[in-house]
Amino acid sequence: MKKTKAILVVSFGTTYTAACTANIGSVENKISFAFPDYTVRRAFTSRIVVRKLFNRDGIIVDTEKQALDRLQAEGYSQVIIQPLHIIPGDEYDKVSQLVSHYIREKTFANIVLGRPILYYSGQENKPDDYLIAVAALQTQIPQLGNKDAILFMGHGGMHPANAAYAALQLRLQDSGFHNIFIFTVDGEGYPTLESVIQKLKKQAITQVMLMPLMLVAGDHAINDMAADDPSSAKSQLLAAGFQVETYLYGLGENPTIQNIYVQHVQDALENKYDRYARGHDRPPIPVIE
Image (cartoon, rainbow, N blue to C red; front, side):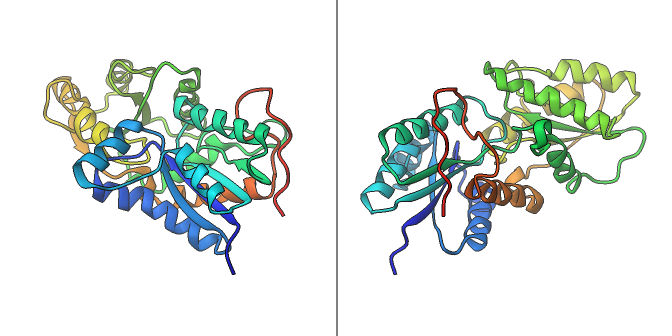
């Protein structure tokens, strides 16, 4: 029997083949296993990544619009879009606006947008995505001594949603993790690495481990975080006198993070919460049977 229900898994994308398999592919596989009645498809929001994969490797990956148009042409009537973004920033907005368009045009009988890792913060009986994320991050953190610290590097940017990084830092502190810090790619947002270095010195930290707060340990993790270039986070920390280790695994390889995405699909499927997209002109989300 032909399936009429689909889950479109949308991420920024990556040109690193092994990282794509380990992070994006792992989440997709877990979603496929959890929802066997649904066809699971992939889409990338980065046009640069999509073009590079095609030009370099001949690999075709749909953009979010191409993927949804393909699902429509193939006769799918019920679609859940699950973003693999960490925060509801620019890339999430891109997907949200497209979903709102398809809802207004009644392109599908049912179309629902799930939420990224960090969205709700526990108000009005909604989940506290930040505390859930803290618990998931804890599973990949080694035992730390008084002189040790973990530094998570997020992407950063100009979007107001980048305040989520500072909010996550506060939630870590409230949870008792006083030697775990969040910073963003150099020059891309707040908290900055410079501000974190000052905190490390005040706490007399001597050894740090760098981890990407990103779905994939791709270009930013390899070059901006862990490279030997003087501008990398690793080099700046070494120059500031710290011993530095790097952890080059994306969040997509963390099984607990994978489970969060599965739960967000389930929440969207059940229409459990009242809003999955930014904007106030979005009509009510129909329940998927």
